Image 1 (cartoon, helix red, strand yellow):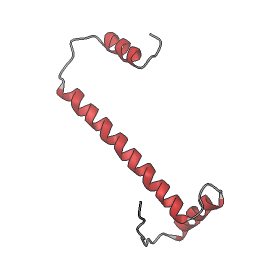
Image 2 (tube, one colour; image 1 turned 30 degrees about the vertical axis):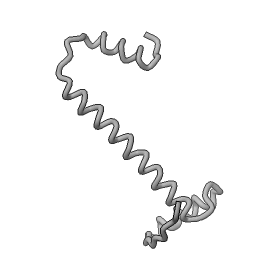
Image 3 (cartoon, one colour; image 1 turned 60 degrees about the vertical axis):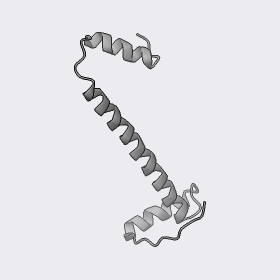
Length: 83
């Protein structure tokens, strides 16, 4: 994938943090660290979107006639938890 050059400005404290992450050995340079932050933000936003969608779907489904115990048992069963 072609790379695009970006220029950013950070505070002295932020710069110290970025450098400490590089010094830890996990990242080779500032760009690697910032790309990782962007990937994590993208994943987080995607998870939030999925959760919002599920909440909206649940809200639209209306009020259930099942008991809380039945709902909990079904949820545990769906997620392979001991009932």
